[in-house]
Image 1: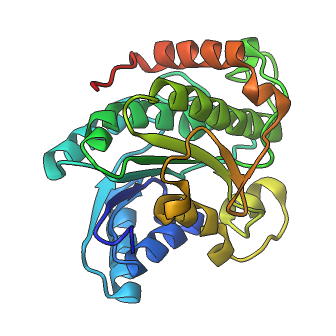
Image 2: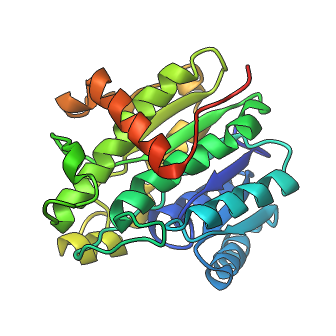
Length: 275
């Protein structure tokens, strides 16, 4: 199996879809790096996965994704422990009904759902490049937005929980499309997906509804992480393991460029990857 022994980092893997993704990967023989926002949650999740799968080739890392400094420390720790990353799955996400600001002064939904993964991905690019597998997978949602107002990225003008969430998921998709172009000559592929309407804590708290099983929520992430069918596929949006179309605005290259530049400025990061 192609994913066996591959090193895979899954953000937000202490519960929900992320944990199920980590379980599935461990069952397939991958070396899974479990991420949590604190050490106890991350260690407990890792031990649960070992007990469930019998795969003890696991590791855990810690960072509150609302904190740029913690993300940078986590990236440094990954560089110390690993000489490559084969697959990065940016899965973590939140839904905030009230506007809250991070320690860096940015709105939490936008930080955790978009900026955190923008920063982490860029920080880890050189490790991913060292792999011969080289896959980046971003978890978005079919609930992604159909507009992007740059004067309200942080909910500065008005704040609505669903609006903030859908905007962040649109940013996941636009980030993926831009990154795919930037990585064209590196061999690294990057794709984005809708996991389904899944009965997670986020769905219950944010949308007040039930969905399908947690087990079904990991299927497209696992497909993109392990399937030979997508070996050379990059810059695509997937639903139920098939290429699909995201919202019309998500393909707007000028807005993609504007979002990338704004994200660089907010995170204090400039894109750079050696070929």
